[in-house]
Each structure stands twice: as C-alpha cells, then as structure tokens.
Image 1 (cartoon, rainbow, N blue to C red):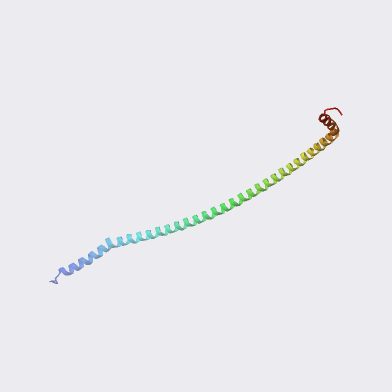
Image 2: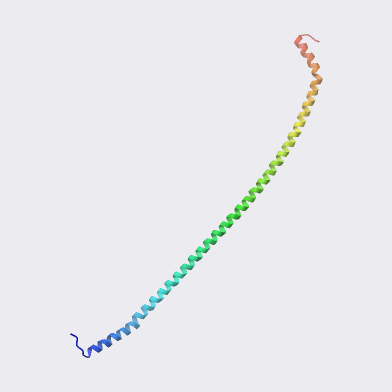
Amino acid sequence: MITVDITMPIHILNILFLIVVLNAVLYRPVRRILAERKQKIADLNNEVETFNKNAKLRAEEFDSKFRDARRKAKAEFDAARNEAQAAGADTVQRIRSEADKAKAAQMSTIAAEIKAADQALKGQVEVFATEMAGKVLGRAL
C-alpha cells in the first residue's frame, strides 16, 4: 500500500529534477546531434543529386558533341571521297583521251604503212607473177 508521507513529495521533486537534468544533459544534445546528422544527410543527398544531374548533363553534352564531330567527320570524308573520285574520273578521262589520240595516231601510221606497202606490192605484182609463173612452168618467161 502507498503511504503518503514526506518521502513522496521528495521522490516527486527528485523525479522532476532528474527529468530537467537528463533533458539538459542527455536528451537535448542527442536530439541536436540527430538533427545535425539529419541535416548533413539531407545536404549530402542534395549534393549527390546535383552531381548526378551534372554528370547526366555532361554525358548528354559529350554525346551531342561526339555526334556532331562524327557528323562533321563523315561530311568531310564524303567531300574528300567525292573530290578524289572526281579527280580520279578526270585523270581517267584525260588518260583515256590521250590513249585514244595515241591509238588514232598509231592507226593512221599503220594505215599509211599499209597503203605504202600495198602500193609497193602493187608495183611488184608483175615481177612476182612472172617469177611465179616461171617457177610453176619450170621455164623462164
């Protein structure tokens, strides 16, 4: 059974005093440290979010620049290839033209030689015919 005497108010004062002391010495500092830790974690999470956003932006920027560089390189390569093909086509056309001219010159030279040989042989046809007839008949004509 509970008896009400002088010790009861002393115990109540003792408990109140203990609550005040513990609150000042233990609970407030622990709550303050927990609040600071929570704030630090929130700040770190914000920083991580910022770093992730920056990393994503930089990756997108890099991809964009890489695509632009690839597009420019392809355009320059195509231009150089087209230029080389045009130069090659011009060179081939020039060589073909020179070959046609050389061929025509040689053909005219050969035609002239054939004509000269034909005329030379036409002039000697009678001599050859007489010699052949003599050899075939076995006597001189």
